[in-house]
Length: 70
Image (cartoon, rainbow, N blue to C red; front, side, top):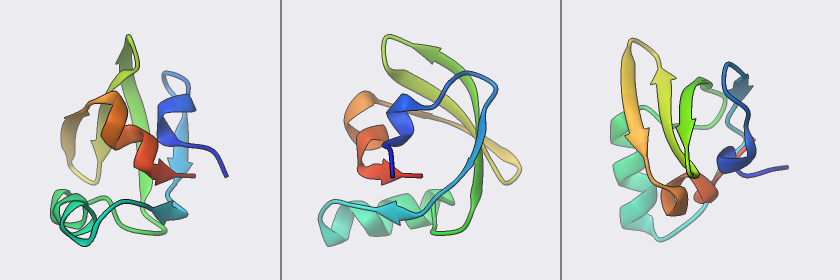
């Protein structure tokens, strides 16, 4: 498994695991980041990502992106 922060622009990946404290995992689930969900990297700047999840685009910082594994 690799962290989402390592995904390349334009790549679509499937989430395998979400790390972090319970509060962090709950917040990520509320945003649509759940196991087996497909996520597309729309843009990447200095490790920060803009992601397409379901019908939404969400910006994630390096730290949160590193907790999501694909």
